[in-house]
Image (cartoon, rainbow, N blue to C red; front, side, top):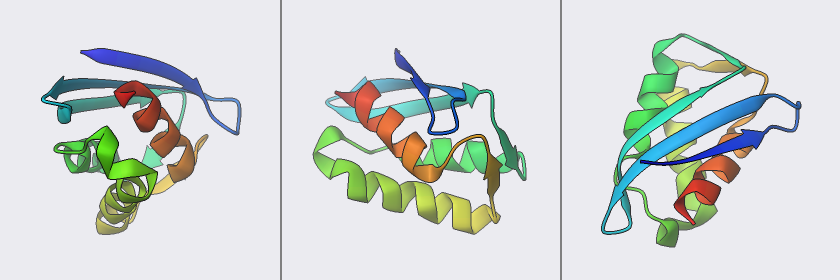
Length: 93
């Protein structure tokens, strides 16, 4: 697993850990000092990241994160979807 800790725009740490095979995410874990409701939203985002690659770029990763958040009606405090995308892009680089 490859991991990165990232300070959000709100100065909150988030930790993204990914397992990759052939430059594609096969598993993802997102933890840190943030609040997201409903709780299953984090799991949906982690699932949405499976299959992503650095070649997808930030816009496609943002679309995956956004779709998962919309699907669950996610509300987050302590970070933004953009912060998460930056962390994912960093961990894949």
